[in-house]
Length: 233
Image (tube, rainbow, N blue to C red):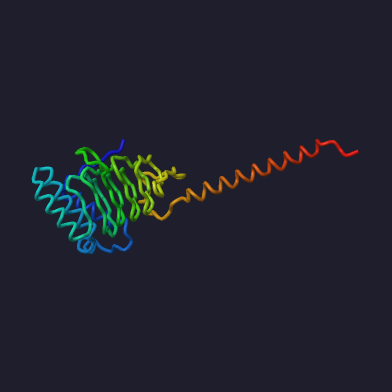
């Protein structure tokens, strides 16, 4: 069960957003630099304002703010989406977060990520992202699916099915691999979205090994049959 910390839009939430950037981006040097020069933070803060307005019923104003944020930053976040604390948007250009998307705490998104819908029905149709999830550049997560806590989505992956907690996902469609060393809330942020297992290569190696075993078995069987043949008189 994923726990989502609902945004309260208070000063502690805004402060934790800044601290998240400093913790997860080695290029960030000072808080003032982050506040003034990080479009991902600007988009997140404008979302937090728009989301509060949306929840109060001022939905046109919320959409106008959201549209302004998209024009300013290249990041589109629907004001009805639910986003927890300490979301870090790195670079950010081209990110799309849909209306019914839910994002947990301490999530990291790289540029080109889409949390998209797959239905025209007015229901939950966008993904739910668990806590401490890292989503690599260009990844697409589509539909009302669940990405479990502490998972990592590889760059350019397309995910259309639920992902268990502590998994790594790669490829099109996304292939799920369980982590050999689980990630926990006490660990440092896992930003290594370049570390993706070679699922196809592993399968090829397994098949090659199996073929070699079968060839050896056939060779042994052939040799045994030759030994059993009567000698020529």
